Length: 95
Image 1 (cartoon, rainbow, N blue to C red):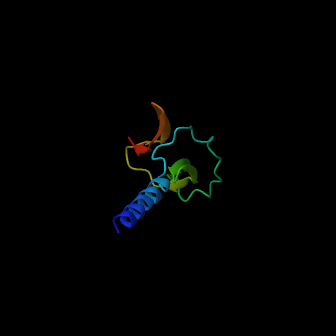
Image 2 (image 1 turned 90 degrees about the vertical axis):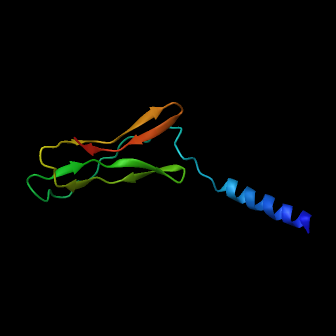
Image 3 (image 1 turned 30 degrees about the horizontal axis):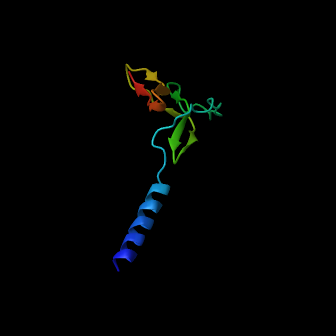
């Protein structure tokens, strides 16, 4: 019985290990895409650029969108930054 329990436990651990994904990418994202901008919804709308998102061990494109500006603030776009051997996403923000 003990031998069977060890085999099951080892099998379970191997399944968990094989399903792990890299938390941070070790290679740069692809070049930015050119989003097709829909019509500007209002005269003061601000376009937020699309960007690459890291998920499940690969990059996925997140399209850009229009948003209302925050009074007295400007939009600072997000960007990818190399930190040691990894690439880290620094989200955009209002400043």
